[in-house]
Image 1 (spheres, rainbow, N blue to C red):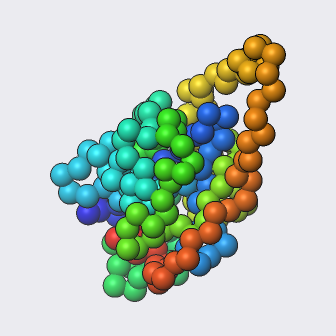
Image 2: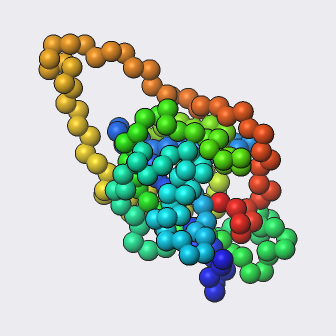
Image 3: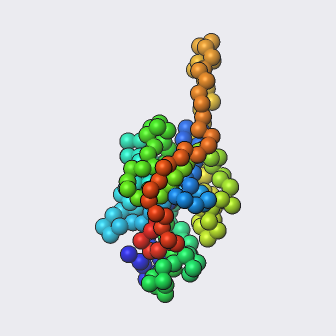
Length: 198
């Protein structure tokens, strides 16, 4: 489903944890990191597409997250011709996206990169909000910067109050996920970025 200008409607997801760090997924069998994203199907609203993609790519359901904000307008990026399937060249130009800012209210163990038979990511980690965009494929960097900038004003305030220390107790040491969580993937990675890929 393309618009008149050749852009496919799509959603992007910036998922926050309680420290305002963002979910960062590694595209399956590549060295490219990105946020979850995917196409809007015919008859879907952007919000419906966002929840479907969130489950398909990360394994989360609506009860695991809270919607904080979304971008006002479509943000667009063009896909270089050599990334487009030969049969789609000429009419497909790229993606137009509505971006959502979500806060995780579930736990890290609720994530499941194998929620479907066609996983998008084979590893994930939490990263600072202003992610290093050099890790993002070049043609998407501009739209990432626009989405992060527009949605930054809605970041929740972090409560640094520690009830354990106030009560005179030391908090139990909690191991933090600082590295990628591997996925033993069997799916074949998408060949380029056709109009039907996310």
